Length: 193
Image (cartoon, rainbow, N blue to C red; front, side, top):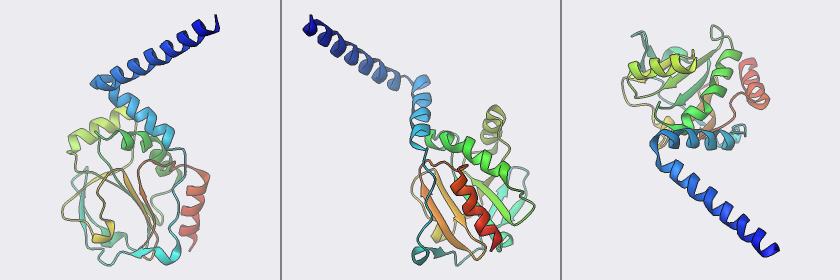
């Protein structure tokens, strides 16, 4: 009898495994599963870089364009805390962390000493439709030229927190919990300096 129960559990496990595998193959369900898995992985707050390892952005002369066609130069944001997220509408890890980034964006008054730059190479038609569908209100930018070498990255999502002096204090690749108390406290500390 115990042998039959053990066999049924093994068969059930195998069936669930194969169903999961098939769902990953089907494009309509694959993205949803990937987003869910990335959300589960993104429960941790990003870590601050040790002070001795923090890099200063030497060249702030980097031009971007926003959704309204306004050109912004990173130079104009010097002296502010900058939250910079590189992302794409097709990227499941990016989509998984967007609600937390939106919550972080909503937490701070961007008229003060903080700026949020959500940078993508996606066309604005795609990003606008994505934001409307998801209810996001953060500003989206496209680069007009190559970004500073200190912001180099090979994968997305890639998020940087830059202090008022131009030092990169957080350099996070992958999903993170951006709306955590730890992250909010870090940003408040940077704003108070």
